[in-house]
Image (cartoon, rainbow, N blue to C red; front, side):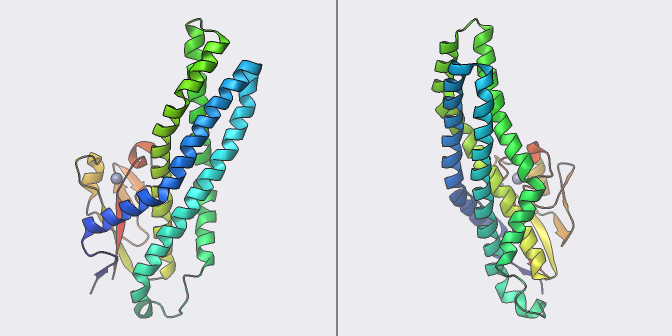
Length: 257
Ligand SMILES: [Zn+2]
């Protein structure tokens, strides 16, 4: 008989997934808010000193910091959600796997390395370029109004904390969600079990219409979900368009067959 992994109530399982996601993304949120604010303040200093030329160094440093913060974020998500699958699937191993010990500690490292190889560069570029564009836009706006260099620097300093906070929440949740979905998917595959996967949407009125439609969609082990006309291997699949994955709170549940 088919057995659902985790909580037997799908919405309850999704709520547990989301609660864990919020918990593990908190550190990334804090670090990212601080970094975006720091970069904007550093831009104010550099712009006062060297004008546009000074911004090059600020952007370079920002890329390095974003890379460090996101790498830590993905590692936490891969470890936490991979482990969750291992724990949930444990009881089914003896029935489904002939050779024991398929899920080894190095699996986590492999999943993380693959995830970074596939999506890491683009994600780091996207986040750091957005900061760069925001800084550029502030400068251009004030310049366009005839503002002076000190006025531009003052504005950058004053908007820095707010810009950091708003973006950090979205970045931390989205990045954690994507890496969590990838890790669960890879870990399920690694168990070698036969299973089906079902898309579970958050149905609280804030969900995307296409995701509510996808709720209950069931596909085979290596098949993709079709959501909003796109093919997604798991909720939050970075291969999807930003409009289909940013701030998504859906998850996949697995049914051992
Ligand atoms: Zn969703």
